[in-house]
Length: 253
Image (cartoon, rainbow, N blue to C red; front, side, top):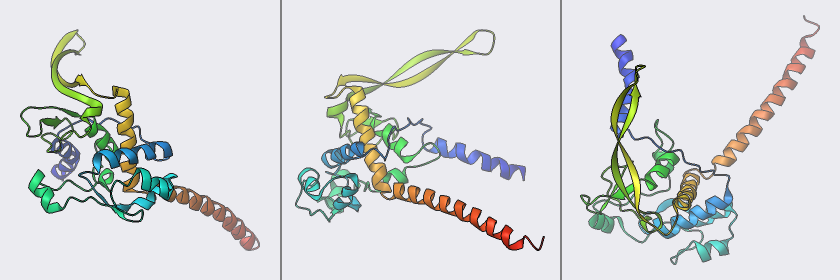
């Protein structure tokens, strides 16, 4: 019995080790921020949709973000698609497999599929999109701290610039006798600036992640609000039911 309990306690640790043991940054996204969602949708269409479809999302759903059909047609549809069409791409899975070795994943629910005990799917995406660095050993010339040996190149490098992964030795205190222990720490360093400053790029990534999180569950905010209203109604109903019960049974007691 003790061995079984020990195995259950070790499961989260083993899972973390299997994922590489990386530490995710907290995504500052907010699906209630309409301006951020609109910006993220624009970034997705311009930089991601060349390879990644959103095959379970329709363009007209973007009207929930305060956009009109004409705005969607003029700014977010770059092909001959109609406003009511799904957000698919022209590249076929067969061609993608031939060109890249595997079809790029659909991003409709990527924010949900990447959620884990290590962090939310939005945290994973936010860390991933900021974690690319130059690696001459990789076929694409890029690697990633969150997704080691990733096959995807850095599509946003012109905006972020080029990072390199450097190893530094840091001294950390150990014990209460003033002893010092040295550790190797890897950190990303911006070697070649891009078109955006680091803070601007982080904001762009946050907006993009915000849109991906929204796209994974477009009705989440409505469901949350509806749930609050239902709980308030049930609370009021409980008070009325309890008062009715007391009135009905007052002569019995």
